Image (cartoon, rainbow, N blue to C red; front, side, top):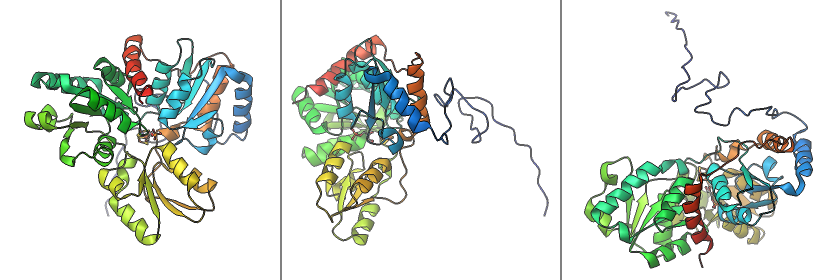
Length: 392
Ligand code: 13P
Ligand code: SF4
């Protein structure tokens, strides 16, 4: 056998550099990985004590919000936990807190910044905690689609509705065009409102939440929905398709929930007789159709809390939440719907070392990783968020 020798050259710090794990850093593509100051080691045995002490030192000056998908090690320090709707309301209802530490992902922290007062600072402990779904709708692409609707003469009758899981500038676009933000707990109410304002809805960025709500809750046909693909000319749709659709769905999805399949539903029903399948509406349409119940993270928690002892549940949502519910209810059989689906990697970026670091920086008088939305974007995004908060 001939021995082959080669020399490995580390790629440069380009936008597409693929660095070997543990070797070098690329600040351009790994925003927030490098914390200025000292990020405590995960093995530091004093992390819980340090977080407790920093939080106590800050007292009422800090309010910590924790999304249900956060790790247990972080959730234990949250003053309030919730789904994205509840957390948006909680952020808006804390004008006395100087600092809002958001243990969640970037779009949630942006919404908190928009809904809080100008003197309040919103901190995201790790700036790399983004959301792959939110990243699937970029403002320039959405404006191109809107220009197309304008050229076709339909824009006046199209109401844009964006899922909370979108960037502030997409929310700003929606506010500018008389639309509304929704979350998984009020999507039907938002769509009811939108169809009172116009004839068609442009739903961003989660095709599954849009389709599931329209078909399963509002009685639309699948044919009433078309899929707008921003990577194809004209969205991959003919003018007739665009004119005829009730729902124009943006081609975005959640990379975690998109992995649950109808096969996992069939398999769990065979394995666990009488099991109740409970999923988040970000799952694919056929999965939601095959499930027994569907709802937001807050809904999932309520359903499991209220379930009778001895009942069996297979839950299709992020693993941190399912694990926590299974541990909280040992008298019920709560399992994860699929054996191979992973944690949400971006939610998981907020770990205890980052939380300790953020809190200790605040104690030291520095504001780390502040999330700010520019005034013009915030003004219009707030219109769309306020419209959501005012939904009947
Ligand atoms: P909830 O609004 O149900 O909390 O969901 C947010 C989310 O990111 C789900 O993936
Ligand atoms: Fe985004 Fe999906 Fe993670 Fe929710 S679970 S934050 S939608 S990637």
